[in-house]
Amino acid sequence: MGRSVALAASLARGGELRGRARAVLNALDVTLDADEGPLHVPGPVGTLIVANHVSWLDIVGLLAVEPAAFLAKREVADWPLVGGLARRLDTLFVDRWALRGLPESVDAVAARLREGRSVAVFPEATTYCSEPGGPFRRAVFQAALDAGAPVRPVTLTYLQGGEPSTVAAFVGDDTLARSIGRVVKASELTLRVRAHPALAPEGDRRELAARARRAVLAAEPAHV
Image 1 (spheres, rainbow, N blue to C red):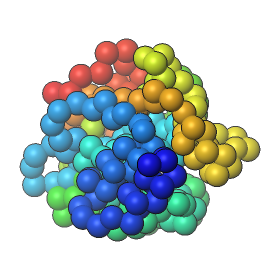
Image 2 (cartoon, helix red, strand yellow):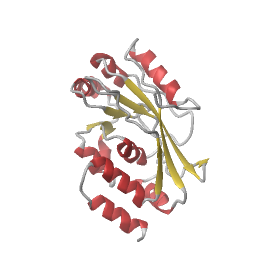
Image 3 (cartoon, rainbow, N blue to C red):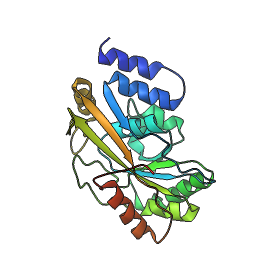
């Protein structure tokens, strides 16, 4: 079965979201290299999951580890492969960090966290194809502070044949169709998901964002 046919079949399948996301990765022949254990921290509130941002495939990879609602730019709702999965999780779609909408978005994320639901965010707000990436926007970390929710930093890395690869990157003037086409044709592509020890919701949002970014950039991530 070709990848395109397998991909269509994976998108048509039902079932829980984690299984559907893994089926998409399998159809694309992308190996998921993820830590054992959940991304969320057990407790009465949810976990703010923050990761670096490389590709549209990041969303599929995180969902394949543990489904969580996302804070994502509005265009994601209409993307093939990931839009439907994200919509099913009651994802918050925003106008790419529009300043006038930020307070409402922060309040909405905090409300979900208080309800015990985890929320995944890419605080760089756009994609980068190589380290060190971009600065972490601080606003969303206020939601963790307001809700008293732990923050789980996660590092996403793409490899081909064990070496860093930009084949899955979706940056600049690239189109989603071209990016998907590269992934479909890629060989030996692995998405590595490394979770770092959770951060307590302490200090101010500037400090918390800085701590999270340092963890994401750490050379040896470890899930604790």
